[in-house]
Amino acid sequence: MIDWTTITAAISVALGGDSERGQELLMDCWNATVPADHAHRCILAHYLADTQSQLDKEVAWDQAALDEHGFLADDALAPLGIASAQGLQPSLQLNLADGYHRQGRTALAREHLDQGLAHADALDNDGYGKLILAGLNNLAQRIDASDPA
Image 1: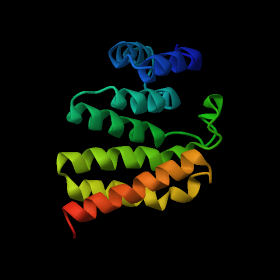
Image 2: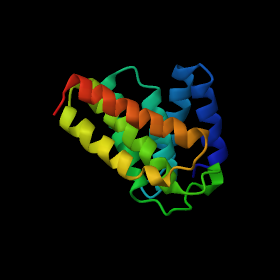
Image 3: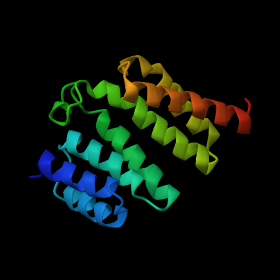
């Protein structure tokens, strides 16, 4: 059984500049989960995506994070200081939409961008919320510039 302390320590390594070691630790955590560990797996997949050097793997992990998020109760991420799991959904949608856009899969990018924008009301009006909303709006402009549909 994996705990949040072990997961957050692995995330700290990954974000601290040693993405290779961070990826190893995150994978160790992932391998210690079971399919019912949706909250752990959502967060792990979210950060595993960031450690990938290959776009296809990054997108696969972003999709896994979003898939796991679909099983979360709203208070499932409270141990991480995330009061509402719904507040994470716009970020997950943004990451996946951005990956699809970089793959040239514009229709899927737009679909996930639209979902992110549709759930933007779940973001708090704080630095994080503003960052994600700005990211969604920036991606919308990039998609429109590359493929005005």
